[in-house]
Image (cartoon, rainbow, N blue to C red; front, top):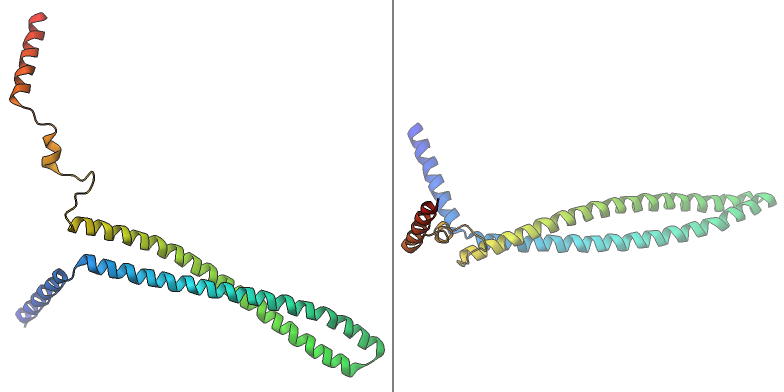
Length: 182
């Protein structure tokens, strides 16, 4: 039984290795970059929608606050004149408006929190996207056979230190001359 398990694991490992070799990393990386760009675009559209909602909420809140100011004066007038029925109607409108105003304030805070979180996520995703783009460019350059500037190539590097037979002879003559003078 153990032998069958080992053979099946070995077979699965070989199949996975073959599949990994078949997948081209450059293509997968480009696909990942496209998906990240799409996600970033979606988040940016979401930010614009949130900003639009925030502007609308702010406008509604301002309008509602302006509508509440005369209601207080009208209530004073109703109580001065003893008209409780009209005062009840005005109080009902005032209470509804105040509750709606509280809702608008809460909703605005929620949207601002979501906006901040989305901005943070967009910044993080932009940096990841830039990193992925750089990796894709590096990978594309390596696969195209382009030599990387400043890349380590030992034979080429050592060639600059090569010494010819003539250089050795000249150095030998200089050393003999210097030693003869001393």
